[in-house]
Image 1: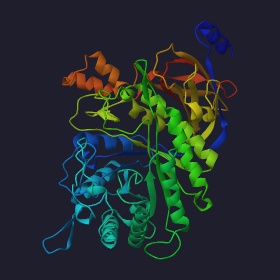
Image 2: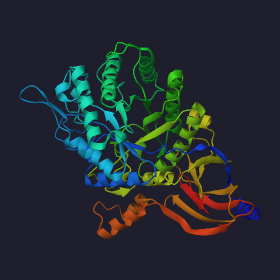
Image 3: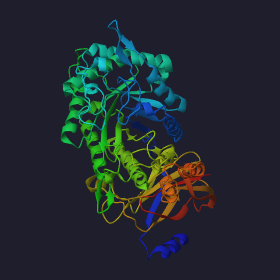
Image 4: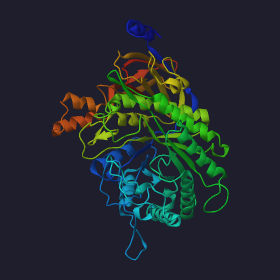
Length: 548
């Protein structure tokens, strides 16, 4: 207590400190790695040099099996990588008029996941050219207008589509084994409520029936789900999600003629809405969480589905990973620590939302990397030219949380409902924590988040961890801020080189790793209590690890 009094006296003239109290004896359920999902548009980047490196880093950040979702897995083409596009040439028609199935590129993608220790979250889509009901123009060719639409059409033959899906699942079983493929999630399509699907909702439901039947025939214990719709707080998108769930619960199945369709998990997307105001970025965490909650409210209207896992199969601050802050300054959060603090607050609040709805809710980050692009161009990526951004270090921190969630109360926490209603835009930031305890360790993630990216003085934090079972513990403190775990600032400091020397490259690699705030040290506890005092800058995240 004396240390707290001295600490508060020192900083009283600066800011009111935030007090965080963690009780390691109050368990709140097992900590689930709900963050261990990632995705991207461009499947052919997977096996490029930096793509392969990033897959390995993602797989290594958590003891759980990371799952990876990619668009365009069934698109016709030669596999040439392109932004917001990709192809595998799985399905074509031979000279004799019969289907030709070629798994070469898909195998290369999935093998890359397997070799790294990750697994696919399989997005079934989009339509092969030979199966498209309106095939021309076919390729998307983003960002040129008008874009091709052939890849987004309903099939010209639903039975032929089902046969393709059946063969794909059987091929996967033959290559990876039934026990492994039974752990995969097979999700039909992406955002069928907008331009990714040029058919009607009824045609999507029909496609789902044929797809689910094919998946289950190929592997009865396989997991099938959808619909991966856009922000459900938007009335039209919310209704699309609702009608799909109603079809699975009560509709006439297009294949069997019976009531309903198999559904093993539910997906939808939730995005935020950043703005650029008075020369700085103002994030839209409230809108992001509104969309997440609205989807859960819609699902709760179907009691038969309330126990199903939910994957927000794109959870992001906004909706265009391949857009640059050069044209859209509201995207300027991506290279620095603002993205990391945003996702720290998101992770905790998605978990709380899952508790509220008694549902296992998972968040998939739609960010990867782009090959052969300028360093720190500002795309929504986890790494640039093989250099990890601060956001990747946030997920490395999350990987250090394990065991049971335990009680963490913060005097500076903004309540969930308040964030949903209006974001974090008042005078005070959200200074909060997420804590876990395992057999011989505990961990506390602490963040200082505000929607507005405006610099302030670092906030004094008093962290008190109680009910520790040892009189002496080892304390590690890792940090993401302007000078720690931040390759972007290191790059700027060296003059923003686009062709860094080997020495500069090595420095960037090191700066892109998760870094200690101070050397680990042993500390005494008193009556099972450990007290720590530190300053936490705005948009910074700390992870305090304790072992005994």
